[in-house]
Length: 173
Image 1 (tube, rainbow, N blue to C red):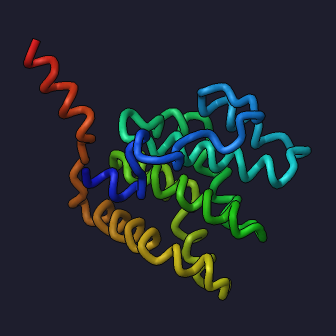
Image 2 (spheres, rainbow, N blue to C red; image 1 turned 135 degrees about the horizontal axis):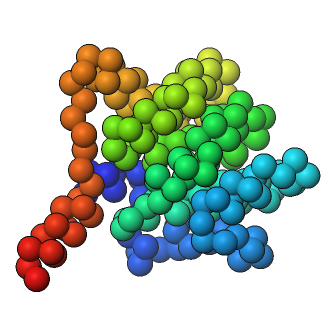
Image 3 (cartoon, one colour; image 1 turned 30 degrees about the vertical axis):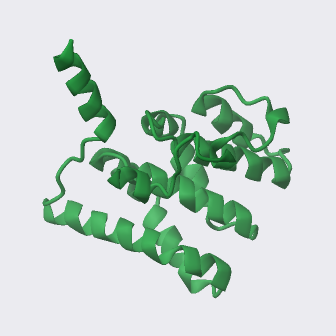
């Protein structure tokens, strides 16, 4: 439940928030395909935003979000780069992707930090774009708190509720 709140997600059946943005994107279900599409320099901004939004929606799933798959596909550095975009929608979606990744296990949070996520979030706060700045403080505070805990060695590895559910299911067999 706590991870659901952190990801600002909704149950897949509640509404269309987690439905694909554009069915014409021809995205394979994997993060690697999305990352490859984003690496195309000829990709227009509208499609780029749609792909990032689709990544965010996949990472917002209630069950088994593909966080590690996104990290392995190189999504973090791309999203950090998009935080510097002039397109506020792209910035917003990229920040949401990064916070979804950071809401995972400690090594996944570290992947966001290693990609330069914290300084990029802080730079957004300095830009003066009020629309963007309003959405960032909680995300920056969360990352800052996590980094401090990691530096102090007090960060406990978080276990996803899904992993707990799977363990309970195995015990029930």
